[in-house]
Length: 128
Image 1 (cartoon, helix red, strand yellow):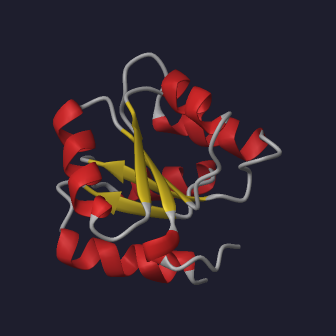
Image 2: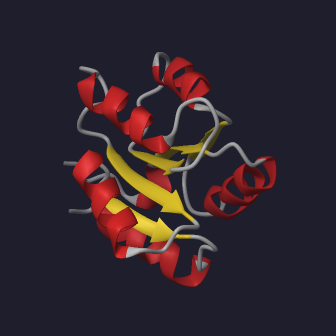
């Protein structure tokens, strides 16, 4: 488990929507040391070969490979298997939350993201 303060954290944000990646980078960039973005699972896995973030934020619904595939691959890796991960999804059924947690995410956040509550939640997640 991580005990890195949010301000010192490196965060990987994975989303196929460019505007969402830009928004996450802009907002989170005010609160963390570095935000690295990826537009796909394959791109995220390439990034994870060179960095070891304290936190991964991933959209669930992406073309080709989805967020569930990403978290499976992350949890199988030796270097990043304990990295905290948050699933992001516009789907809001309880089953979606349960599926994300069962797949290996630590938390599920519905889109659109309420940033006034999101940043404190991330702080708490990194201090668990």
